[in-house]
Length: 206
Image (cartoon, rainbow, N blue to C red):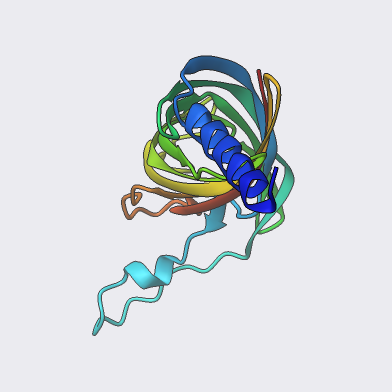
């Protein structure tokens, strides 16, 4: 067999493999976990809410906010459809606890929540280690956020991307996600939820 014939057979085999992967169809379950690299809460600047041109001076208590734990974990389900597309739904529990101190009085705030991202995904046709992109929305429900201290928001826009390694039925992935939550209303609460959230997730899917 000539070198040209060998190269043609190799190219044909590689093309057939990629085409077969693009006809992939199935339903997978697994788990994802990781850490956020942004805070979910921040101290609110009450002075910014005073209309310009007025002589009002807001009371300015000394307020600090300290984070004690912050992690992400939860189940994932994915429907794979041909040509590299997929639909993914997660149930991510975000543990988040803060200590809000105002004039030497400390209050513990639990900002833990269940986040449910619903995403469309596309995997690029590259063998073994596949880059992917995702986008969609998310809904969250807080477990015991004190509404008298923080006003909750529930809906977000999501963008993400990462790499996936497939070994037989096992899929290992690492990805980054950016979530932009709806804007909380202006109020006099000491803390508010940040609109932008970044996170790193690692997945194990069968």
